[in-house]
Image (tube, rainbow, N blue to C red; front, side, top):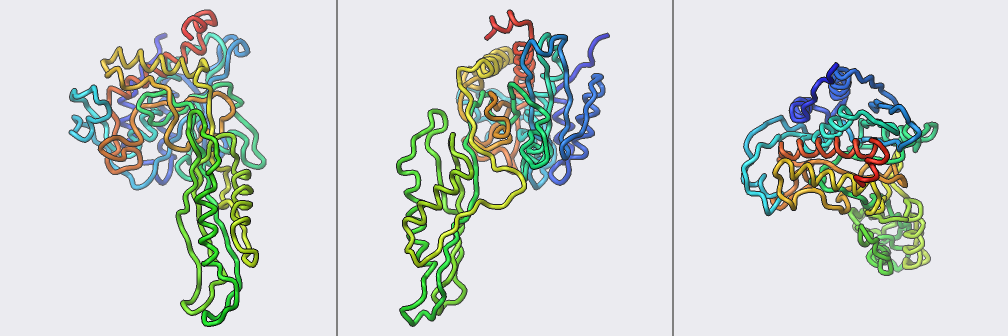
Length: 405
């Protein structure tokens, strides 16, 4: 019996027409229906994640490969549209000035285009060794509670995946992305003593912010650059303090955004920043540094060895797929870091590659999360072919896989 055909572009058209900025219920139904037509059963677990599996005849003779992306999108919804690329949609590659169809709408590249590619890789797979899991999360764009529960990172949960290798769908321009900075948010709270502004009394928390900001500014002065991600970055983003214009302020709070590199953890960052601020601020002003409360763990930085078999497999597959579809040689197949924090963080330290069609941004401006979100149809097809090639290589005959790697 022949397997039902799966067209990633047709699926993407349906997916973009299915809003998932407020609820992913309809997207879950679409995925379950798509898998069911191929005879694949799926289940909803861990707070709304969709999971399906294919086992080879020799599940212990090869790796457990997990294909992951998310079903939700940011707001607001942008309606579906398909048509020829406009001038500002033809700048993704300097070597490509050919006309091309694009699909526009919310989720076109983040991350329903990558989802279509991973579904193609999963449905086409007939593993000869190891096993293959499709794991789709419901709230990556908000709190990532589904991804955290699925990987055992929430209290009272267990790791339901236990994967050896992870291929994560996000818009990477068909590049194999091996690392991403983490993203933490915290507050520096300064506590002084209120007094009348006419008197030389009290302890001014707002004035102490000058010293606290100096500590923030110099926090990474001696930091080492990560070989893939470069230096970490610490940015003060919001400052609030004072209650009356004629009063020495007793309180001031500074919010900071942290983009971390390995091996820094959220708690390691918090304690280090607290020590740095405390060393600069006058003794009469209290200092407390706290991470912003959230139910799920922050995305910490991750990195995979660029020479790992998974990386070369995905990059080679992307280059081969791009060549077969006539994409420019400079479009796809490079190995580089990813520009945003993702749930890929939850899979570390297992080897992880982020991959998919579309771009976070380009020369003409933002793409993902923007009103002009779109993806090139040819690149969706290329990503699907690359996903199929990658799965076949990693879970195929061991001798064949070794030769391909």
